[in-house]
Image 1 (spheres, rainbow over the protein chains, first blue to last red):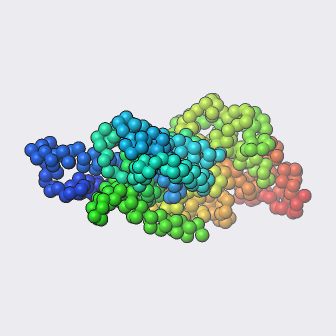
Image 2 (image 1 turned 120 degrees about the horizontal axis):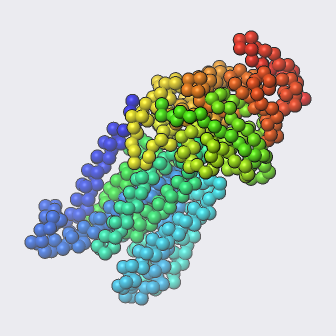
Image 3 (image 1 turned 90 degrees about the vertical axis):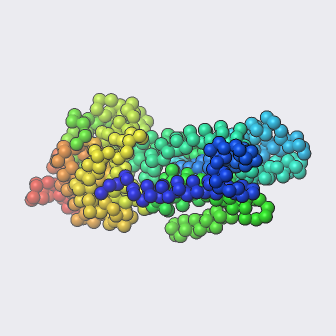
Length: 341
Length: 266
């Protein structure tokens, strides 16, 4: 009887990695006009004989694909951590106000610093927007955690406080939109719908590094966080500093979610649904961080491919994640209610 | 066994404990008898569980100290403490979908580092814990599908897998019928005899406590009234003073332990 090596988890991992590669290949080949896969592969390997294909792949599509991967992995890992810490499948960064906080930060920059029809330019757009989005998410997360904190973290309290902060951030964002002129508002709305369009290397490169560091942290914390599903006394008895672990896991989740939003905008449902899908397919009690991240990657890649190619007009990826995730949220709420009843 | 060979010492020194309001226990001093089975008895709300939680560092002292192996427990990392003391709270909660083996393997946490996988040593301790609690056949079963007695044995197996010299059990027999209470207490005594573990538990049933403990501690209103061998502690006067119970104490024939026959309240 072997307890820790789960063949099912390994098999699921292998299949998911294969799916990620496949989805990434399709994503790379199908941004805008479809390119032959072999041409894409050659361009990726450094063959610049066809300059147009080479530039399209390396300067436009590769960063976009990488952005989808970072966003998917970060958001899903963030969801896995918050759902574990809160012992509640609804407690994801999009419900808890973290992603809404990021949106507020980003929209504030677009509206307050935007220069009319010209929009943001230079420094303002390439640095201040990501920084503001990141700070907004982390601040919202910190606020939720502090307000929800009592002797322990009560899952309902956390979700309710999170919904409150989420509502506040959303209303402030709407108010911001009415302040700016129409062009800025339109630009902000595009960002808010979760678009991977026009993500370039100067943004994607540093975020890939940051994402990797945060994900490594999440993997280390993941297994230990699973202990938090037992009650606080038992967990303390097992030698875990419960308050500290909960705080680090939640803080890491807020950082991850904010990083994901910086890259792709507030892609809804990725953080909520991916960990639960990962939990269901691995059959584990708490959502495993690595599997969740892989599911998140596939989810965002597929969503962006679908959104960009299904309709004559290319849509932001967030529209597709919303269409796919909405029904899932309803399903989850109904199931959760039935279990409580 | 990877347990440390030294005799463990656990002691409360002028310990004051409380939750939000008033103190529940004030300036209590108590040394846990090493290598023996001790039961804390007393009426509801007398501070039995509070004392146990204090001894197991689940509750921070308002003043005074809990001393483990000569050092204040608060000066040691919670992981260090978890390698010496295992504590099972009253009616512990677990998420649904957890198997017995999952639960018991969590008892290995204080002995694992974050970079380590489940080792052969862990596997051995896990199997030993499952076998000595009679849960080996149910390792793959879901916790929520077990009977009350089985579930309690699974929790005991978890803290056994921790391989500590001291075990603190808060009302381990709650919600069990008499046969299962006896079965569990026999398991507790076996854990003590086989590895000379020090065991402290909170028990409600005075006769069962007297039957299965080497040492009894009677508490009332946050203080220790008396302690000693069961026949010294369980007397008609004590039952009256501590529990407000009129009772006869007879000696049960098998082991000469005191047995309580209640006559009436007050």
